[in-house]
Image (cartoon, rainbow, N blue to C red; front, side):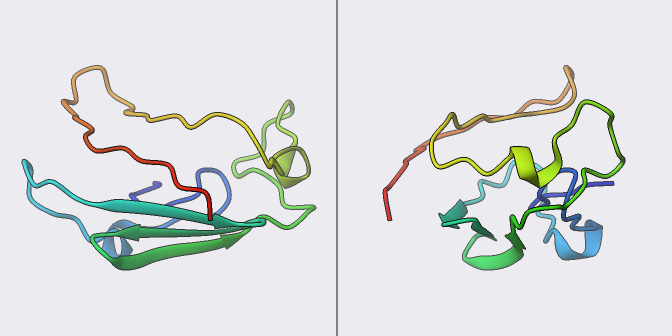
Length: 99
């Protein structure tokens, strides 16, 4: 199962590494991307680092997924996601800063 800080399909963070906080707690997240190196922080603590090198395959494999070869973007969109229609989630103070 992928938890907070995971790079979905490529670099899994388990429950122990996710730094779970109680319900109702606001958390600060920072996702820093320099070139193809991704760093994911929550509340100032590094949860995960991922190098988006060519040739990595999405896990579990999907026939229509390009793997990292098709995911090396310099521009694009930012998406915020929740998986369950019954989960309640809020976002605030979202900022994007060019490094």
